[in-house]
Length: 313
Image (tube, rainbow, N blue to C red; front, side, top):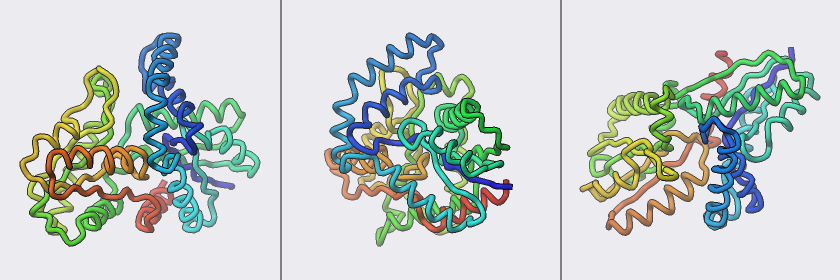
């Protein structure tokens, strides 16, 4: 039986011309803007896209004119393909190319009969995992693709993955001593109303931090304090708290290490928002050290982790 693995992620602009497309597709997603009225959602999406496009283009320009996410993902796919030579490995993005339809038609041309979907979100959320998986199923139905499909829903509790995150923390610390640093696990925020409706994301983030705290102690990485904070809030509605900016303002310790918890691949939220915008905030607050850990990206240990997840389906 011909078998494939498809990595799923939100995506990011491959060039400045795709910034508007990215915003348009994201805010028209009913899992993101959850109002039931389609026309109202389209209007809200139009207003947000119109108001944010120029600023977003300026931000991506600072990253070289594109999101780094797709490039890192291609490197990861190449390595995972080498690690799984008997499977076909591909990836699809939710809001920018390569879209699911392109990938599914490729799978059909290769006569793939079984697909393992692996969303690159460590925690399950309706706004990420559910959205990406629903999109894949909808396009598969549209294309008449009738393969057997399996799903890896979450992997925040995978021990190999978490040991890799501890290693990334060590790398970010360099020669600094953890006892002199506050550690902030920064997760992408969600509107509070989505969590109140039963989205498990916040609960899984908190469980994840509990697991990582134990591993840090076992690894003799004893930080002064450890916090959870949320980034990337948008609009006037109530979002998960505390925000990363609020947390930075309340810290007495002026040595901080930020760990992007909800991302496996570096993107604009890590390389621009965390590494540039919040660094400026830290400088204004007279921080002595402000460090940001790298995401797993195409690290060989992440490749091995994903390989094992796939083989254990």
